[in-house]
Each structure stands twice: as structure tokens, then as C-alpha cells.
Length: 316
Image (cartoon, rainbow, N blue to C red):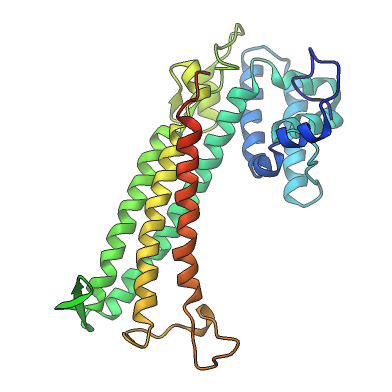
């Protein structure tokens, strides 16, 4: 597949180097967002008279067909493509011909990548908020059932004062409510459109950045083109919020592990969420809670990895 950047170069990129350079195995999950961004960009180009209405119609229909085929399982991602942006444009070219090349007018992969990532993380963070709300609902229901169930409250893992099991569960509900607030606050900075920044310094085309942002249901446009394509603060904020969520889940998981032990025997795990032993049949192991506790380290590692990647990057 021809690279989007291949204009100046004549030799083929080494196969191993091409594979090393490819991100499609990761960013293929952003295909819906890539198409959404391209549809908004196409509509804006047509509205400004930069491309013809006929070309815009062909591009939009072609992009819609790609999305429909992918969702139906009728289109496979070509993993020899450099990234999802290259794949979509190449597939569009196969379907509609010359008009596909006009999609890239007044747009660089830099602002395209940035808008795709923002749209993808907006969707994902919204889904996470929904999952946390479900968890809070369960905690509240359990707390209501056990508002009079007495248990020991601990300090230093030593029995301190009598409390209720419902009160203890609601402490975690409070943590998860704060987690939702952090995600929602991060969305304010995440939901800003970088489109129109192009590679780093904008474009000479008479584009309408506010129109593109509005079509994508974004709250505004980035004020500085250099910052727009270089900014990944929203990724760091989200990774930080996710790390705190995992810390809360890990604390809760550890208490479940303790409560289910013979030494505590406060709770009995449902067999749908426990495992046994290959040689000790009397055991019911809290593996699911242990895995939640263990996977927390992955999220911490991702946050540190992002911070390390960003710390020395010059603009842009």
C-alpha cells in the first residue's frame, strides 16, 4: 500500500522498518472515529466551496459504506497499512476513485490523529462512566439491604468501633462518585477540536473550524495550532483518573479477599466469581478480586509510560 507521505521518496521502505513503523494493530479500534472526523471535515469543505458537492457526496457515501461493512464484519482491516487513517483513505480510493484524494484537502495526519484520539477517548470515557454508575448502583442496593448489619470498623487492621456493612460499602460509593467527577472534568479539555491545525501551522484554505467542531459535537476549537497537534494532556489526565479508579477498585478487591478468608469469614463469594484448586478441593479462591488488584499495575504502568514519552518532546 502506498504511504501517504511517499511523495518525495522513491525507494520502498524496508519491510521490517515498515512493520516497526506501523500503528494499525493499535489504532484500528479508532475506525469509527476516523470516519466521523472525515465526514465532518468533508461537510465543512463542501460548505466552504473548497470541494464540490458531488465530490462531498461521493466521499460521504464511500465513508459510510466502509463503516457499515466494517460493523457488519464484511470488511477486514489490512494490517500492512501504516495506520487506520491510511487504510480508510486507501479503501475509499478503491470505492470512489479520484474524489477520495480530495478528502485530505486542508488536513494533515497530525490534526487527523489528534481529533480521532479525542473522539475515541470521549467515547471510551463515557462508557467507563456508565460502568462506574452501574457499580455505584449495586453498592447502594447492597448498602440498603445491610443498613442494619453490624460489622467491626477497623483502624490499623485492628477492630476499632462497630459500624454497619452498609456504611462501609457506601464509603466506596463515595470514591467512585469522585472518579466520575474526575472523568467528567477531564472531558471538558478533551472535547476540543484540533481540526484546521494541519501539520502544525494551519492552512491557507478558507476553512470553518467551528463548523467542523460543531459537527463532531465538540465544545470548541484549539486556540494554538502548535499546541493542538502536540497536546496529549487529555491522555495524561484520563490515564491519571483511570489509575485512581483502579486504586479504588484494588482497595475494594483487597477487602473482599480479606472478608472471604477463613480468618474473617464476613462474606461468601458466589461460585460464578470464584475458582477452585487443582489439588485442594476445599478451597474457593477469590481469583477475580485478585486479578482486579493485579491488573491495577498495568494502568499505573501506562500512566508512567505516557508521562515518560511526553517529558522531552519538543514542539511539534
